[in-house]
Length: 147
Image (cartoon, rainbow, N blue to C red; front, side, top):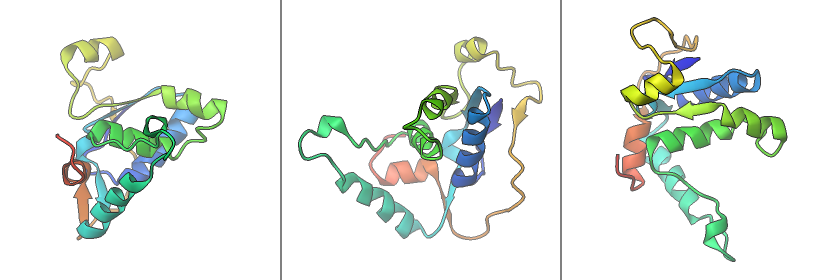
């Protein structure tokens, strides 16, 4: 299943992808940087920046790791919707692939992605966001990532 994340709310998208992966489907998410997070700009950025203060004092190499690239950022949010500490959650997480933008030709051939066909699935999310929101790309730029 190929999902276009453009204009979709990140939390709803994450739960949809997680549920599909738990059911055994291979899920590819494209345009991850164009997914949106609803809320006030300052609060979104502040909550993401607060996560960087969490660390393991014994060894920072043990984590927790916070990603600044949009594709990794979205993949980590999807992982939060999975029972990752259990075997079925880890196996489902391996079935999820996230790309920023549209993948290049060699990646399309590897996953058998034909973008000319109507095989890009958009989850049925009837809500439209009016007002306050930020794209994942802007959030990653605000927390120090290079997009």
